[in-house]
Length: 258
Image (cartoon, rainbow, N blue to C red; front, side, top):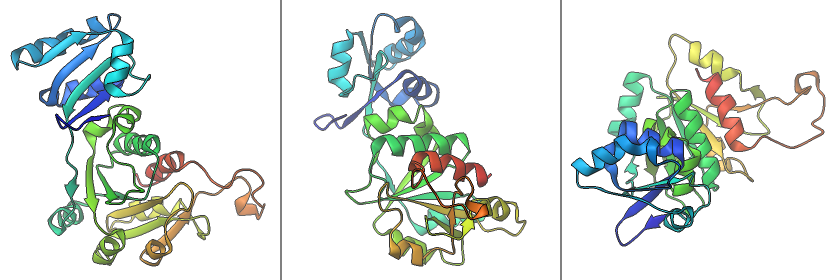
């Protein structure tokens, strides 16, 4: 939940606030907590006191109003609203030089899915996430921050005006991998690509929860991959759900990239 007047974002959830305390305590301007979790934030209160920050004990209902969620887990930290960095060629050139992989999200609309993808990316050491400047794309919110369970502190999130133009610009420079239900190659292809000694960095594209990646994105991918369902390799038709949730799929894909 954003406070537009003060340009603040509420970060809630025990793990999210604890990781924020560990990595960037200086970003916290105000801290509110319930009586039962107060002893676990004594150190942070001391840090805030030194930098003239505000901290107060509040009832759970007040925290709900502050962050707009019942899932605050007894603590809410207010930070300056994060500014998403526009991606440029200097940044992508550094990825290529350092062999850093990246993830491009093609209109992932659910904030919880976005947060879960960030969490998985952080777990598997993928530091670079790109999101389009599109109303259909979820961004950094109180909800996505909480679901990321502290993962926001370990990734860099960049924005692009056009995902297609980005993919065009990175042609021959990175291995552009799209995820699609009509793909012929298994996601295990990513493992082979990652082990290739002369490999290029991988840019994997995850698609919208309902439509998947767009046709324009597909045309600008070097390869398309799919997560095989039970019996797929034996020619067995899919008989249950059509696909995994995009956040679940992301975890499998990121594992294969390592």
